[in-house]
Amino acid sequence: ASIVASHYHPEFIVNSKETGKINLVNYQDLKNLKVTSIDSARFLHDGGFDSTGRYFLVAANASNKIAVVDTKDNKLAALVDVGKTPHPGRGANFVDPKYGRVWSTGHLGDETISVIGTDPRRKDAAWKVVRTLKGQGGGSLFIKTHPKSKNLWVDTALNPDPKISQSIAVYDINNLDKGYDVLPIAEWAGLGEGAKRVVQPEYNRAGDEVWFSVWSAKNQ
Image 1 (cartoon, rainbow, N blue to C red):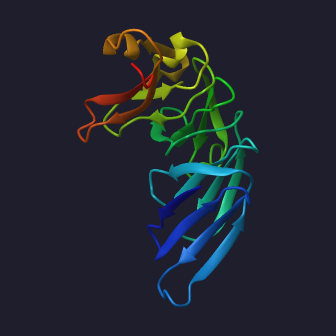
Image 2 (spheres, rainbow, N blue to C red):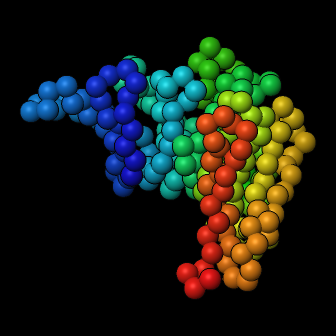
């Protein structure tokens, strides 16, 4: 379901969706590939690295879990219970004012955003859900922030309510308890009538602009 490259070894991390197995494929000798197979949970989908690049966090969406792989020591670090049908894209890393380094995901099946501690030195927070934020609703596909930004953006492109699928929730990372503000991105885009699903916030390199895709109907 997803493939990423290790920052520590000549390896690809290959997530086999239906099997729930994470395969670390060492390509140093292409004629004699070595594979380390790690059992996790089903069905593996997309994911991303923590801020250090050592730990890969991947959604097991049918199991409502996030699998955490230590790509330096080549082992499963944790299986973390999250909300219903997690869908992180690459997830979003930021520094939580209370819990330090964290990684976060939204969900297809409910309105929550799970915030997971990623600093192994923080025994109170490491590989645990340290915050569960309430979002606009289910149907989230992507979550995004930037090291130079204080904002956390969460889309809800697959929500059945047009007001929710056509807007974006944005949180202040320094005041997460405040909740979110809603920005009517599709309305601002001025695309007229028809479906207008707002999806996948992405920052520019400087971190001072965030861009969105807006899905309109094929005949619009």
